Amino acid sequence: MAYRHLRARSIQILERNWRCRRGEIDLICYDPARGSIFACEVKTRRDHGRVPAIESISRAKLARLRQLLAFWISTHNMHAELLEIDVIAITVSADHSWNLCHIEGVL
Image (cartoon, rainbow, N blue to C red; front, side):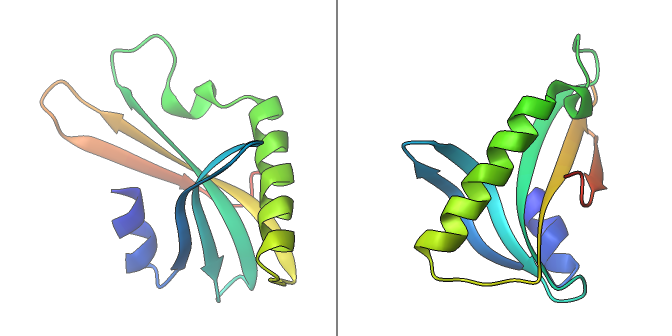
């Protein structure tokens, strides 16, 4: 769902589920409209869960994503004017319908 959402907005997906010994990034993307490369953290939760998807991402996790993105940039010989962290929170209802919330530039 997150992948389709980003592609529909003409955002280029550079990498999916990138891993290294330091951690993982769900999606690494380039948004020509923003001129930025960003790491996108995707969280999915059921609507009756204890913690909503958006609230399940800590500041420490966001900071770690920022470090991982900088490491990815350096190892892939890339450059961008702006490096950002986005969050996509997907909430699934009991009837299997879903709601997607995309927050740009969280960090």
